[in-house]
Amino acid sequence: MKSFKLILLSINLLLVNSQTITVSRDCPSLNNFLNLPQNTECCTLNGYQCDAEGYLTHISINAQNNYIENIPKTIMNSSSLEYLNFNENNIKFLPNDFFTSLTKLKELELGNNIIENIPSTISGLDNLIYLNLRYNNLKSLPENLFNLPSLGFINLDENQELNVLINRSSSNTSIDTCSIKGINVVCYEPGSCNKLLISKNEKITDEEAKTKYISCSEYNRKNGTNSNSNSKSKYLIIGISVALICLVIISALLFIKYKKKNKNNNNTINTININNNNK
Image (tube, rainbow, N blue to C red):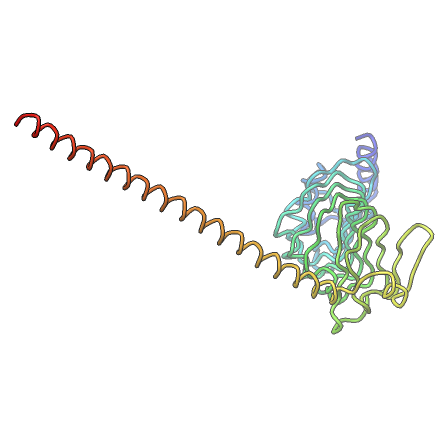
C-alpha cells in the first residue's frame, strides 16, 4: 500500500504543475478508481494518454504491490483504449464481457496476477498485437486465442496448470514469438509461431517445434477417435445396465405373481379341506 500511496503522491505533484483547465471525458471515472479529485486532468499524468476528443487510449497501472483486485467497468467500456497495463497486481477474475468494448486494444499486460480464466470475448480483439498473461493461475484458454488476426507476441510463461493447444489457422500469418516456459504444450500446429521460447535458455524455431510436439491436426484425429470409442463404450455400458435393471424388475414381478398364485392355490385347497371336514 505504501508504493500505491507514493504513486498517488507523484500524481498529485504532477497535477500541481499542470496548467490544464478542462477535464477529459474519461478522467472522472479513472479519478474515482484512483481516489483522485474529480477535477484531475488524468491525460497529463505519466502512464495515461488521451485522444483529441478526450478519451483514454493508454492506461498503465504497473506498480508492484498495488493489490488491485478488480478492473473497473469504466475501463472496460473505454472503446478508444489501445494500451492497458495491470501487471503485478492481485486480479483474479475478469467478467465475461470484459473485452466486448475494447475493440481498439493493441497491447494488453495482465502478467503477475492470479487470473484463472480468460473470457472468450477476447476473440473479438482483432487489433491486439501484444498479449502478456505470464505468471497467473490459468487453467485453460479460449479456443480461438491463437487465431487473433493481428497477434504478434504472446507470453504464457509459468501458468503451471495450463494445458495449451497452440493451433493457429493457416489463413493467419504466424505469431512472431510465443513464450511458453513452464506450461504443458498438448500439441503444436506447424506454422503457428515463428519462434518459441520454451525455457530460460532455449528458443526453438517453427521447424524444430514440428519435431518436438505432436501436431494439433493429428492430436484432434486421435482424440476424436478415442472420444468416439469412449462414447460407444459408454453407451454399451448404459445399455447393459438398463437391460439388467429391466431383467431384475421382470423377475421380481414374476416372483410376486408366482407367490400370489401359490397363495391363492393354498387358500383354495384349504377351503376344499374345510368343506370336506364339514361333511
